[in-house]
Image 1 (cartoon, helix red, strand yellow):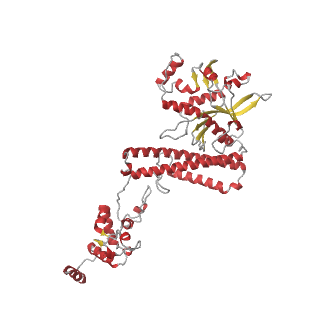
Image 2 (spheres, rainbow, N blue to C red):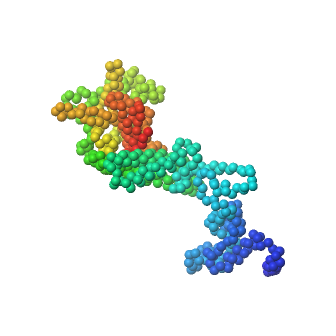
Image 3 (cartoon, rainbow, N blue to C red):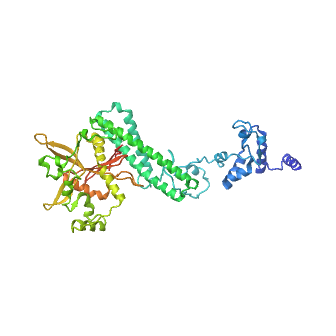
Length: 520
């Protein structure tokens, strides 16, 4: 009591510094016990600065120690309403603000937001003194996590980004959204031809975004594997738990968006097929009746061929006994051109030479995994044909048909040298007089690939793998076309690279059993 009287005397004689922080803290303890509800407690700016510094230096532990026992457990132990706590039931050491209040308090009044996108902090520049002539430039390098939410995550390097700049990307997004929104708003007033062009353009836009999303999905899956390896089996209690949970949520979101975009492209193809009057051959779902598909022409079995076609290898169905017999007579086939030209490994070239030139019997050991992938590719070709005829042709080439092909011979110096078996062609059927036999008139070659699922790769091809380039070029030669369609099929979706040639090519991806559309 003597010390308290001394305090009162010093204040009365104006000898005690009222700005002393310990005195300010004492006054706030007094204020704490003066209010009838601790929720009404407020703090002065000077004490908030003190607690802000303490929190920065020693974090939450010092706040909990200095505060003492507040109103913890009152709602459970004593009849009380949430948010109404009697300060007389507390045993505090100091009146300490909550962590949320301290975090929100800006002790320098800089008006700098808590979340900052990459770039120059203009608010910090405004704080510089006009009396100084020299300044220290601080560059804080952070590894930015892209795509965390709708506003943050973009890396703006002011035009120095690798590849497409953020500015160009934002401008492209704005153009694409404007095109789509304008098309929706003006759909009823647009002419039919313009509608067809708009749908094709939007399919390309959706397809490009699908391509970007799938590449992002692969990178997220790689990141998840890395974090899991670092964290171990008990990752939920490791320091990587938040990173792993965030990446898992991102992967789930990406997969959901991919599915929605595939569905969107499928709807666009259906609407486009209606506009070009080919809805009769467009397949809405994922099943196609081969016998009812009018834009598909298939080969008969060898024993059912008309007599004039029995010796023409072009009309001999692939993978029949007669086709295999013919194939054995050639040193090179379209599918083996990459190895035969020496573009593969030296070991592969030597093995091919020993087998077809030196006639050495080689026991090729094929692993179960490779055999399974090969069988999957062969068995899935019919699905690729169904995708082409049921999804692609109805909109993009409504007047053309898919034509199944047998084999073609490429001769060197008038001698048969290479046997090429295209997966088919796209074109017209010219009926001879009498109407029974048909003569194919291909405009494009067809090559189908059906890869098995692989970790950390996009599920479909967005460019033709280099090992298939000699094969597709040989197919264009034997079909006497300068263009080819390369379709990559998976159960989820497909991509089709159209108009492959030595001059240029356009990529397209289609939804559902198809997917997206791209152009190069």
